[in-house]
Amino acid sequence: MYKMTLPLLILAGGLMQSCKLDEYNPSGFTIDAVAASSVEGYQKIVNNTYFGMERALYGNSQWMMFLEGGTDIWTNQKNSPTSNIQFFKYGGIANIPTNTLNTVWNVCYDGIGYCNTAIKYAPTAPFPSDAERNASVAQAHFMRAMYYYNLVEQFGGVTAPTEPVASINLKPERMAPLDVYKKIIIPDLEFAAQWLPVNNGITKPSKKSALGFLARAFLQTVEYDDTKSLAGKALETAKLLIADSESGGTKYNAFMYPTFDEVFAESNNQNNRESLWSHRFVVGGVSNNAWVMNTHNELFYAVVTDFPAMSFAGTDYTTWGRRSSGSFMPTHHLLNLFVQDNGTLDPRYQKSFQTTWTGNRASYTWSDANLRTFDRGAAVTGSLLLGDKTIEFVHPNEVGYAAKVATKLDQKYLVVDYNDVYNAGTKTVKMDYNRVNREPGTTVSPNPFVGFYPSLTKHNSSNYFVNNAASNRYGNLNAMFMMRMSEVYLIAAEADIYANGGSGAAAYVNKVRSRAGAVPLGGGITIQSVLDERARELCGEFVRFYDLKRTKKLNKAYLNSTNPDVGQFFRDGNNELRPIPSSFLNTLQGGGTYYQNPGY
Picture 1 (tube, rainbow, N blue to C red):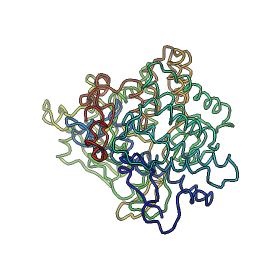
Picture 2 (cartoon, rainbow, N blue to C red):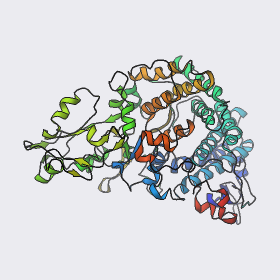
Picture 3 (tube, rainbow, N blue to C red):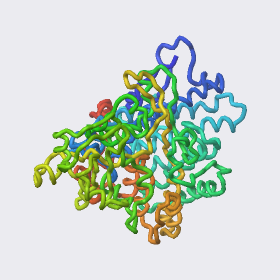
Picture 4 (cartoon, one colour):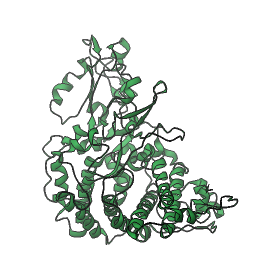
């Protein structure tokens, strides 16, 4: 039988294979015997490579905090000084606790162990042809590249075995990030791009998945290579997908929807043609909390229940746009990026964010206490009924803004003025509110309007498995997209700047903008231009932390200039990397102090 060893012990022991036979083994089976017994037996080994991704990376909503939190475009719920600050504010004054990414570290090496095992024993599996063998093992190559890609971008240089290891090494060394890319990540993705099938599968990667991640990997190397020698390869790979998409997708099945609305339409979720790699949960299994499934839909909601006219119970759990109290709050910088040069809002602002809520109580009547809390004028009376407009967030650049804010405190529904939530001058969230009607001239803290802000809708769902309605156990069955075709155009734009001085960059960026109905950008596309476009197109899609790292913007100066609520806590020379988990370091010689990242 198989005996699972803890990933922590695996790494401390020289990163031995994650699944091995040891000690008492009455069955007599070995991994090579299982692989050689049948194609199905070998495929079970390959299937194990996905477990870590689903458990703690893209299948786990906390992973979104590691990839999007702590950047220029998000702060935490209500810009809280205490909630989730290890993800959003680098631990605040106290820095990030050293075991924050313990599970991520463990499952990545566990996954790598499975990948190494699958790759080693592929030659023994009785496939009818080498082509079928290569197509199967290509999954393990893709997944190993994915695990190493995320390990390197989170932790920097890491120990990087490519075969199952049996010897114990209590002082492993770290391979430099660029070497991990050149020796493992890129070759693995090249193999996967050659042999994975052309399809639009869910969870299992396809040829376009490998090409998309290969373009990403080539581009990410500019972070570690001042010569940017592989930027041309990023552009070349991106152009393969772009050419295929624009010619009908006959070679790689690449596709970009004609309109932005179609990308996140729930009817397109399960078999999204624009997604290069998707993952979704399925009903079944007996593991604890199997009903949880995809919880990314819970991350981006404003705290609308701070207004007593709103409730959150029962069918609100399964109704699109009805949740409350997510973890992510958009920053002034992100919302300002949607203001176009002509002063209008990029259409993606309204298509990506919910800014209006209707009441979901049978009726609501203003109390004296709530009139005071929300600074209502004396004339506010009456009730809000089920389905009435109850909350509206208004942006200074939207049509009708001036008229709406002129009477904002006289409406019986809550009109939330952008300028009551954000300070455009300091680019921060307003934690205090200056009263106008009730005790005019006084300042109250906390700001009663700080919980009402645009809520990203990309992950919203009405597709649920009902496990136990009485306990509010609903499993979201929607897929998440780990990479989309529109990103490939933005990879091409950035790579073109590095490789060719940017002569072709505008065309790639404007392909994405024209699809969204946005005003095209003129010449002079810069790295910052592309970074801004990536925020507009890809916010909330697992990329921002790595974008800032790659473009040398993950530093205190940049964050203070765009998101001071987060930037004030960033430590240069420290927070660019996450702490190596102390639970792993404690197993190494001398407590592993030599292995820890700077500043932890």
